[in-house]
Structures are given as structure tokens and as C-alpha cells.
Image (cartoon, rainbow over all chains, first blue to last red; front, top):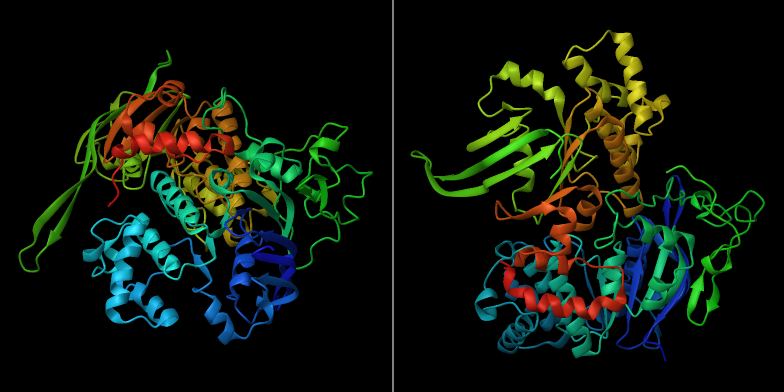
Length: 337
Length: 287
């Protein structure tokens, strides 16, 4: 049985202008110890998906309007706030983009780790301190015992993210959700933190949901990749399959828009830009949400009138488009960039 | 190096910041060498990419080149003329030849000015043309950067990040500069929008023979834009040369570690790259 099973989740924000359909019918599942990468650009709903799983969406204005989130046999959307508090931190932990704002600047690092151990396990002060040192050592922070006495500002960005990971690991969660965990970090530190996450995931047999805007970061860690666009999953496949044979025009465009590090003629060439912007999620079209920017949507297609469903093109490879790469018969329309 | 004449020559550039302490008697408690003896040159119509991590001194270098910050020592020659120590008035005239595009299109545009006024301001300041001519020039500039000139009476907050960055580029182009310092021009943008702006910068370079000092932390972006690349660390250039050489066969251990750290969208190569990173870990320090 899957550890986490999200089924037709819809999280909408009810604003004065109307209901913003931030997450609009997404489904995915995750086995024990597996990694899923959710990738997409700003506003695609990837973070709201994570917050919905954690029960951390701001209510109001947001509300889960339908769908279920089965975690280890329980539907998280049906739990009371009190019950959720026991799941959060204990069984599902989360780390965020900005390690500075997610640590309390007025409390020593040691206090911030031991309070988790006290809340969920009722450990004694001494026990908790010893465990905190172990945790800092596990995330490879040198001189762990001394550094428990330091405040967050004494740590660099990368070290702060390591502290956040230590806090997340404190209860040996079954699932870790990492929301843009390395976006604020320099590239060398990012690589170190990603490598650390991967090692820890293996050692603890922990499942991981990695949320990022960076196709490269997803490729580094994910077994499964879900590409999100305008509140929906538009393509989902195994990591190697997705990067070898992308099907959705949006996925292809995202990959084409990335400048290559090692390619030839990158200086002379142009990048594949996607014209326009994602649709307004207050009143999204009852159609393919990418149609307006899609180079393959022709005037005689039903792209602009019928909403495509996710379909399985190859085993495990799902696409929401009328024009996946392997079924195309014509060249893209010339679109100005 | 190319045969084109050199537009910008920077020699032994240094910028130090002094941290002061004490109340009645101020004293310098320590000195930060943000830029520590940097030399490079850019030929007409070419791009030098300056790449490095945060705190490497790359942005400070850009500001010192434009004399937006006064260098502690060193020389900056633009078309053969020394800018360091140049008089105010003379420098003001030269500014029309050197412009800058900033990272954050949200904070670098005055929210109380219309798009048209923002783009036209450099023309006004430098006393170019009559009111009517300036209006025509603004429309032309907006058109060049792919921004609908019909929106020139609107305000920056009405536009997305990519559109705002187009406004910033149009403003930088207003005075027909020869050099534009691009300071992380696409770092705040989503990847699909980033590609639009990078393509725009490429087109403008070709059409107007612009030279760029292209500053970025993103190694792939720098590669896509640059003829030559200089890698900075702790205020110094650790390696420099033609883009293909620096990226294709890096000599410096830090450059190698930097390149091995870039996430590449190819899961098959992940293991190799991870092994390589472990080998190069000694070249990096984390505080």
C-alpha cells in the first residue's frame, strides 16, 4: 500500500475577486522511501499542494473543497486540528525555502531542536540534549555540542538549512516535504544540501516530496516527477523517462528554456522562450490551460474548448495534452517569443 | 581574444569596506576586501560574464566599473579614458555611454512614475531632444524591447516581472549606450520568462553592437550569454578566458567544484557528478 495517496485534491482560495483555483484536481501517490519531485513555475500550485498535505493552508481564505489525502491509512483532510498536530512533525515533517525565517532568531538552536523532542516524545532535558547533538552530527554540522548554544544568526544559510533538516529528522518522520529547500542557497551549498538529503532519505528509509522550480534539482533526486501548470499536473513519469522522453509541450518548453551548461553553440543560439503568461486561476478556461501558449494548438483543434484528461501514454507516463510529442504529426506554429 | 578594439579595460581594481566600531572615537575594526585586485577587458559588442557565488564581489565590481561606487584603487578605462578620479561633470556626460540593468524589476522602478516617464527620464536628465521627440523615442524604445507602447501611461505594478524587466532594459537603452552592466538581470524571473529576457538581450546586442558586463550566479545563464568568462571568489578572479575553455577544461579547483555543483537536467549523470563533487569538496568552505 502506498504511504501517501493524494486523490483529486482541490484547494481553492476564496477572495473578493472570486475563487482562485490554486490546486485543481491533482492526484499522485508515494511509496515508502520513494522520492517525488513536483516541479513548476511560480503560481502553479506546488507549494499549496504541500501546505494542503501538512494542513497548513491559511483558512480562511483557503479551503480544501474536495479530494482526499490518505496517509498511512488515515484521511488527513478529515482530521481535527489536534489530531493533525500529532501527525505534523512526528510523522510528516517539512522544510521551507528560507532557513532564516523558519528558525526563531531569539532562541538558541539547541532549544529549537529539543522542543520538538519534548513535544512529541516527552524526553527529559538531558536525553533531549544528547539526541540534539546526535542530530546535528547527522546533518554534518561540525562541533555539534558547542553549536547548540548558538543563535541562528551565527549560522550561514547552508548551515541553517542543515539545522532545519535536523529538526525535521528529530522524530524520524515517514515523509519529509521539502519546499524549495535550496533555492536561497549558493550553487555549491545547494549541491551539498541535496546530497545530504539524499543520504538521509536512504538511511532513514524516508519518503520525500521535493518541490522546486528547477528542473536540474528534480533530476538530481527524484524517482518520480510531476510537472505542474496552472493548478494541475500536466505530466508525470519516472525521472529518467521524463527527461529522456518529455511528452507535454510545457515540459518540453521548460527544458528548452534552460540554458545548457555543456552544450555547443549556446552563445550563438537562442533559448526556447514560452510566449505569454499562465492563465488567471480565478476563472481558468474550461479547456487545456496551456492552449494559449502552446505551439501545437491549432485553430481547428479542440484545445481551446475541451479540457484534456491525464492519460497514460506509456506505462507510468501520464500526460494531459492533445498534442504529446509522440503523437504529433505537424510542426509547431510559429509563435513570436 | 577578439580583434575588435577594447571598450573597457579594468586594471587591479580594489574596493575595501571598513567596519567601524566605537562611539566617541571611531576606529576601523576590520577591513573587508570586497574586490581584491581584479583586471579584465571587454571589446566592443562583446560580453564578459562575471560569475561567482554570493559575496564573491561580482556586483561590487560592476558598481565600481560604472563609478556608482568609488574604487579604493585601480584603474577603469572606458574607450581609453580613465574614469577613476574623473570630474563630476565629465563623468556625467560619459554616463550616457554606460548603463545598468538591475536584478529586481520590482524595486528598481519608481512605482510612482509611469512606464513612459521611467523610460524617458534618462533623455530628460541628459537634455536629449524636445518633449515631442522624447515621446516618440520612448515609444520606439518600448517597441524594441517588446513592450506594448500603448501601455506607456500605466504604472510598473500593473505588469509582471518579465514585463518590468523589459521596462528596465528600455530605460538602459534610452541613451544609446555602448556598454550595459547586467547585474543578475534574470535571477528574479521564472525560467520561461528568463529565456524571453535572455533572447531579448542577445537580439539587442546584435542590433546595437552593445557590450555587456554580465554578472550572474547562474553558471548556465552566463554560459549562454558570454564570449569570455571570469570566475570570481573572495574578491579575486580565480580563472578567466574564452567561455568554451573555462567551462570545457577548467584549470582551477574552485571552478571545477562550481561546475560540478550545477544541477543538470539529466538523471543518468547524477551519480557521476556526485562522485566528482565529493572529490572536489576540499575546494569549498562553508561557514
